[in-house]
Length: 327
Length: 282
Image 1: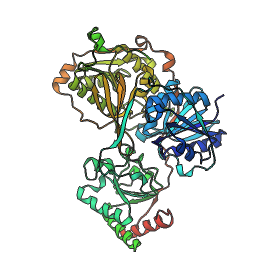
Image 2: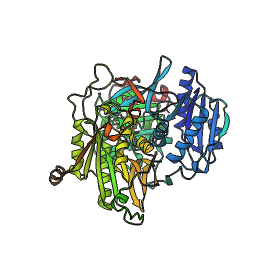
Image 3: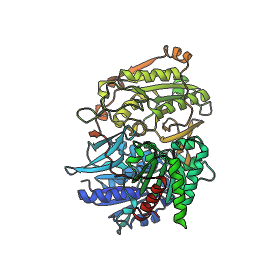
Image 4: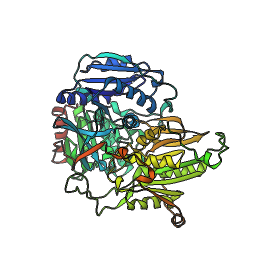
């Protein structure tokens, strides 16, 4: 009998992907509502530290799966190992955060069990004791409630930022090693070293304050007023895709599905309309401020504070006020 | 694992030499989706959109998959086959691909293909691709309508082949391929794997070509093979839905936005006060 919720924990060389805690939080919330216990699984070659870190959350068991074939992530290796873990632990549900890595292997894992991943959900509800997932269709223009049709286990992933990883309940989990059978034939992908293209690449994911600029800035020379505001606030500057495509700011400042995903304390969007490709990269921010001349701009749908007006008047005023506050 | 017939073997059965120029036979999957700026109306049952009066286009990332296939063919030689699944209207997508330079088309059409989920689509595509034989099967990384981002990966699993997703660049050497994958936070990674393989292509990785008049004329002579579920021999169980749409609706706004008004300096003072004392970001 399938039982419990199994959460996938992602890491690179022992450094945990913080987004995995969002799936832990999702499992804690769903598990408490449908009366299911939570376990988590980490794959790799030497993952004791990752497991110990995750074990400090309210989880029953953290499983570790170690093999030389899991040293670096490959879709083949993770799928084969994960499938064996599911066979051994018989979960009712597998929950993941919809990262690029999950996108790469989870559909294969589900298909290997003749199932389909319910991927990229932005919410859930319980109807008649069943978990119903909400996902975006038509690039966020519409929402859909979906359910799996077949038997457990059901595999699902949540879009980054759907849950707050820092709201995980603390606890003390048991750590248990599971063994799987893998060999050279299974893993056909040969991954090389990960690399960044830009030399001075910045990691905006750790920035507490971000001021971000979009198409509303109109001209390259106007970027300067937004830079001044960022400096006055002690914030990092970022941008939407059109600004980086025009090379008004470097590519490593781009926020969104093709850029970085951030969850700062403050995200101040200047002249950004809020296309879905941008929003997926910043909606996890704790506080969102939007300045836009168009009151109908979709960015206001997710903003905590909205200012409808001319950014060329408001941004300098904000800069002056921020300078005053510093003193 | 399935054994796929390599077209190189078919062309010259006695000559399987991996050191030779690796000529590629590429199948590229193209989905027809409602145009990006379409006004979408939900149907009366609340289960999907009203599909009358819509105009359609090639799914964005699939168009980049087609361009990647055409560029690989230009570099290495070989053949590009444009494949699309759907009702008669999807032929326009295949014809557009033929006009841009694809060599021939495959159209998967059957009443049983209506309303398939990604697993069902992948089952039909993989049956067609297996019968055809190929070195690379390309899809876009995600469709603009359902947005599953799974079809290519599922097809790889059903075909027993390696895959890579969110691919930015493809190199081929000695019967193997090496692809550049986009990772998160500005990272990239090259991954090698044997061919045949399945790749899902990222948008924006190349510059799309337009069909020339000559291309449009040439396309008229190119073959489009139509295949239905029987011809493909797909297992009906594989077409059965693995997930169900309960309802479709306009997204619910879950944040209450406080709009701040006044003169620019008043707005600035009010906002910073709220950020400090209400939201506590400073």
